[in-house]
Length: 309
Image (tube, rainbow, N blue to C red; front, side):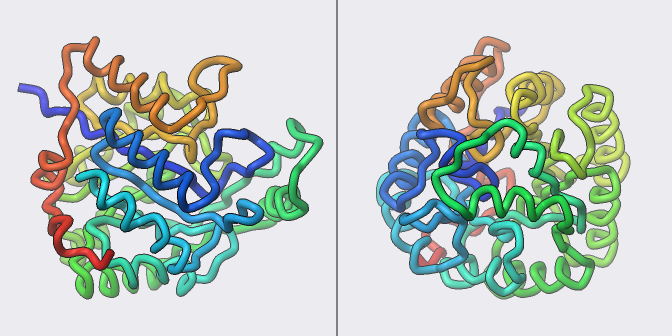
C-alpha cells in the first residue's frame, strides 16, 4: 500500500521580496495566520523563516521568530520546521540562532556549498519598494551559499545531538546526496531521514524530469529504504514537479518560498491556496495526505511537547 503523502509548506521563505507579490507574508501575525491556514488546508510540516516586519528583509532574530512560533503551536498540531539557511549572506551563528532558542522538532539543513543565483529576477522587476531588494538580488551574482563539511557537522551536533532536532536535508544537486551519505556512513545521521530534493535554482540541478528520476535513483542507491523522499521545485516548475514526485511515491513541498504563483500568470493569494491545490491533485490520484502525527511517526520526531515555544 502506498504511503500517505507528507505535504510541507514553506511559508515566507527568504528568497522572494515584498515587491514580487503583495501576498507574501511579512509580519509575525501574517506569517502565523498564513501558516495556520496552510496547516488547516493539509500541510503537516510548516517550514518557517522570519522577516523584518518594517521592510520585509529576512531576519535571523529569535525575538521575531518567537512572535509567531507560539501562535502557530497554539492553533495547529503541524510540525514546525525552522530554517538554518536563513537569508543569503547571514553568518552560520545567525542562521542557527532561532533554532537554538526554539529547539523545534525539525530544521532544514543544506547539504553543500553552492552558487545560489537570484540576479536574473532583476530583469523582470523594475520598481522595488525597498532599496535592499535589488541590492540583495544583485549580490547573488558573486555569492556562494556556504555549507561546508565543517558547517554541516557543527549543525548536526549542535541541533541534532544537543536539541533532538531532525532535519529536512536540502539537496540541490546530486553531489549533495553523496555529502549526506558521507555523514550517514560516519553515523552522524541516523534513519529515518527526510531528503528534500530541490530543482530549478540557478546554481543547482535543473528542473528537468530526467533529473528528478536521476536524483531518485541515486537516493535509492545510497539510502535504500531508510529515507523519506520529498520534492520541491522553484517557480513555474513547482506543481508539475511535485505532482510527478507524488506519483513516484514521494512527499511534496509547496509554499510561497518556492513559488509565488498558483497557476500560469496567477499569483497565489496565500500559502493555503497552494496546499489546497496539491492536496486536490494528490487525492485525485487516489493518494492520501499524511496527518502531522503520521509525519512525526515516519520521521522519528521528538514531539511538539518537547519544543521551547
